[in-house]
Length: 274
Picture 1 (cartoon, rainbow, N blue to C red):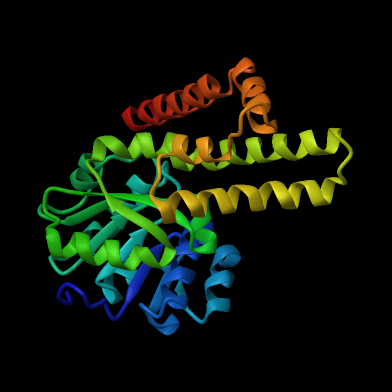
Picture 2 (cartoon, rainbow, N blue to C red):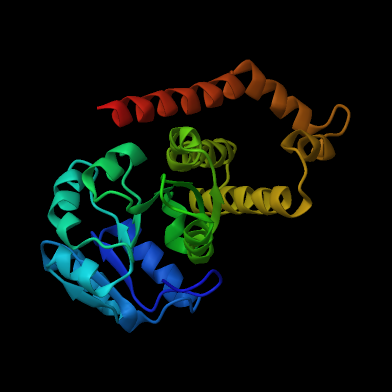
């Protein structure tokens, strides 16, 4: 495997769904790997056509991906991953770095299904990886060292933000950021519908609501402020914002958002135990 700061010549994907395509697209666009050096496998051509459109190589053989690539990302559905790992285990070597993005499959399960001392990492992505604005966390297995973790983290930076965390945080990330995409969309929709109720055309309302979320997120990232500080900057005494915030508090939006993250996290933990 290449040293820290360099990238593998070949990157493999076992599973070719939307998340795999998003990650591959990010790596290629960022110039971290050439399209023809990406090899993806899937049982049928339904999803492989998207990889072929990117200029990647494809196969129906999962073992071929392991035989030709040193860094392999497993992006199958969680329920089929154990069978896939059992299938490829005979061709796993000490040269491989194996990354799972399958939700709810813990590191100890991955390591149990693979040969001893396999270098395994678990990554939790979210849907905005599709536009290279993902929020990802990564946890390393027992035999993945600093060089492997840095390599994977640097590669995935092409798809957004990737931070290394203890595995205990992965399910929380699912509740906050994986499911959080749907929570944010619900809030964006509600903002726009409020404007529609007051007379704004719907297409304009949805565009402005989305841009408001985007601009606010960029300010929070670039300024490094606590959200409460930015919220305070918008407030003026007896102004429009404080009246609107009062209505949100009366509706319990803060408690509802906290409960949503808690519920999604608990569900993720339950799935991990199954």
